[in-house]
Length: 247
Image 1 (cartoon, rainbow, N blue to C red):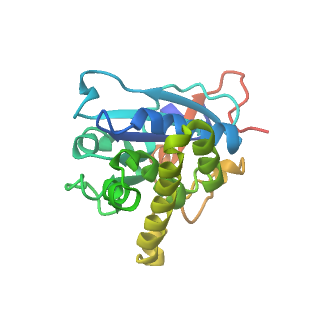
Image 2 (tube, helix red, strand yellow; image 1 turned 90 degrees about the vertical axis):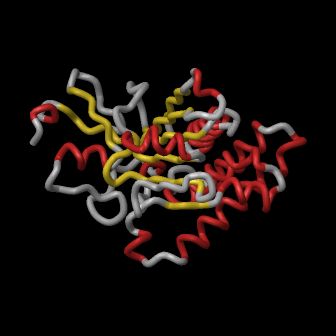
C-alpha cells in the first residue's frame, strides 16, 4: 500500500465538477445540485465556485462534494464526475478526473474528447431544440448526470426546480429535465451492457452505503491509491474523529 494511505481511513464522498464558460449557468447548476442532494435526497454537501478572468468565454467551474456527516474537504484533489459544456473546460479540467470517473460532455461543443469512455450528449442543442432556450443547457446537464449516475434522484431535481426557479422560467426548466433524461436514456439504450457498466453508479451514496466492491463503480484492486479515488472516496487521516459515513 502507498505509505500515504497507511494511516488513513476511507470516507465515502463523491465530488462533481460542473464546468463550462461563464454565462452557461454553471454556478447556478452547482447550487441546484447541492440543494437537490442536501434538501431532498438527504445528503450532506459542500459547494465551491470558480470565479476569475475566465468568467466569460473561458473555463469556469462549480464543484459539489456529496456525502454523509462531516465533510471537511473544500477542494478535492481529484473529481469523480466531470461535466463539460465547452472545449476549454474539458481541456482545463479533464486531468482532475479519476481514472474510472464519469465524463459527460456536450457533443456539439466538445469536439476533442480525451477518452472513449465519455458520455457525449448534445445538451446545448437539446435545450435549444426541445425547450427553445439554450440557457437551460445547465439543467439538461443535471438531468443527464442524474439519469446516468443516480447521484441525485429525478424527484429531488424536479422539486428543487419548483422551489428555486421563478414561475416565469419554471416550465422551461422542467422541460429541460425531461429532455435530459430522455436523451440519456436513448444514448444508454444504444450501448452494450459492457459499455453501460463503465459508467459509475453512485446510487449507493443516497442509501448511505459504502461503494460496491464489484460491478459499476468498482476499483482496480492492483492500485490502492487509484482504487480509493476511482470509487469516489476521499481520504482523511485518523485524528480521533468519526469517519464520514461511519455508523
